[in-house]
Length: 377
Image (cartoon, rainbow, N blue to C red; front, top):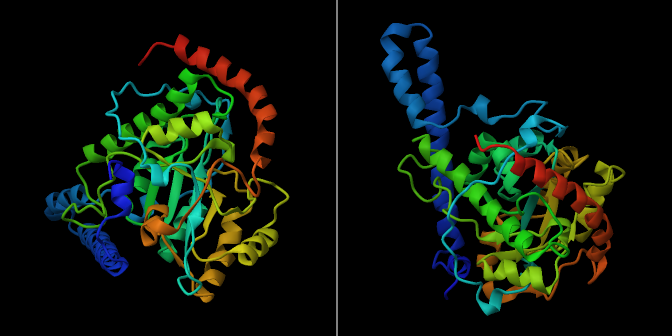
């Protein structure tokens, strides 16, 4: 197959082999962190004798457990902050081959047999003009604590305003990161140049954050620097803002070598009235093998952190396991469920966001002019 994303789906790697590699990497990471913690404790008593050894251990690990964990201020979006004014990186992107015809379209899940209870949890990390949206550490810390794999669809601007958190996500063997456009514009209604830039600028931001991680010269996961701890060079998955697309924008995404990932059903977490109890009921009543679920981890999943603490244990009791979207698609490449266009529950229902997006476009255009007027620092 010509497309890199399709090739990754067809790697001759059994799930058992993948689980073994993942388990080994996580064990080595825990051992590295534990060793560093013990060394740090010892050096508190003999600081002069240990100064060189402690420096070496910090070079070997990227973040301490405390640095990985979030703070209460992480998940709160901030409006009107100067930090929101970020330019897309100036990077030359190597083109990817278009998506193979068999994977073109909108992917909504995988049709797995009833006894193969595997699903993918996905979380959107979008950010609009004039704001720095959140990093919901309550969610991400919990996923790590429970060893739950997940896929994050990150906006390019979000990645730049959360550089270190982005590095932590894309280098964690539990997670993968997909493209969610530069700043969450509705691709159904934008011009051709804007459509192209929304896709490419997010990729440029990803590559910059990845480069910043590589510049740390540290390792997460496997100390030997294996693939489980090295972020992919490029993103291979894409999610449309508002879950809305048309033929033109879908073709643009697939032609850019990206698989368009929708969802089997939505949690409804951006709605403030969607309580934790309602979310739990909605997920547990609709879940099925091969499903892709959508949540938000940018501070706009109002009750998501609370709901996941019931959803995940309940799903485990029901026999479900969690995989990234890429791993889920690998399980049954010939059973991938696709649609000709984007929608939430039925074709056409996501088109209702066009009017809202048209109003937001005025805000985007004003913001873009202000960004261009600023000198590059």
